[in-house]
Length: 579
Image (cartoon, rainbow, N blue to C red; front, side, top):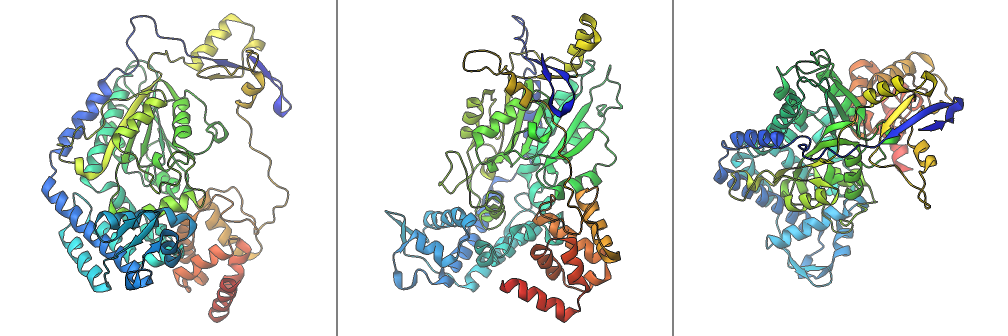
């Protein structure tokens, strides 16, 4: 127990560590959850037609390779059979720093397909050229021949559209997010992230696991606390909600007789959280908040040992440092808690020309900070994931699919999971505080109790109280006094749309949209909503409104631009682009 005086008020805070389970006690969450997940997956995977999936994959691979060969043909870098240094090829493509690793993977893919020769010393030669007609024919075949169990048709059309815009995408002039979420619409993305049979089968397994874990708490009075990181469009969440239907979920359930769940839906972008809040408005047991897997969870308002299950759908491979990320996940999990991940485990060519641009945009020029740095690849296979989970202290069951003979083994997707701290008891902070209240005077009962895996020690072996104080929750910093309110009806209406989108209490005329929680996806949604609600914005093309928001991301700048006549507005944008 320590005294905390930060913020001017003196208060007591306590820290507790989990105790080992008694000898002979069963570890928390013994195999029922994994058995339920395997059973659900096997039932769903039976519907697969492996031959059709392979044919579809071959068609998509051929189309992507034709588009990449056409891209290199058009930039002229391999004219007359020249041998080129890798950096020369990237320069000819105009590859933006954040997309250079992806462009290197393109070269490797073409070499593996026999369309380019790799030479020692990162040099390349012998491109098998392709023209626009070659690429179009290959995509025609892919669109017509790809079965929906691999990708829905609208998603294949998305891949085709992205392949046709590779020059602008690789230069960073076009954002892949705008292809996946046109004008802020997420319907295509929901089909992409949840439409394939492999994803449906793995998400079904996740739902079955959560359902089994919730049922195991029946009669305990304790909810199953679930955290989903990088929830995005919510394809995994949808399956979990469906699996929990009828099991007595939510705080309104009778905690003494039925299981219930507290579900925290998180993403790094408010774009996804806003849409999820609308979809889940009838589900009071789901809350929504921003969470960054690359940042300290305490700084984001979370405490250790507070979740029983953490879910991640194709997100953790995006972590800058995977080892540190897994350590943070371990810290958030209570004893016996499970980390359950669905992950892409091998390259899919169609993603290399579309969704993989999102990884570069997220990491920027910094790239990975772990052993993947400089490799050009982000993905791990199922065996490597299990090794990483074990190194982080997890006990990992076999991955799904379970073998190469599985009908969905060729999908390049897997469910990998692990339990952490299985031999420790899970203390309940509320019960501990109640116990203390019975043992000590009221003034000695701590205002805050946190369960930590171990107490930090100084170099001489004493408890590091300064470190403990740094772990306590902090109040939000005071607002800056430089706030200036919107001026006039147009600025006020823009500020209203902004505030509703970002959940802001107030919006100043000089606030920066991107410094206030906005991102490229929210910018597209903001531009679309401005055109829906403001006649001056509706009179301008969507792309023009979005460009203006990017160039001048303040209420004042947007209002000034919207107040201009059409010709003056175009001249203003041209002037911004010239600077």
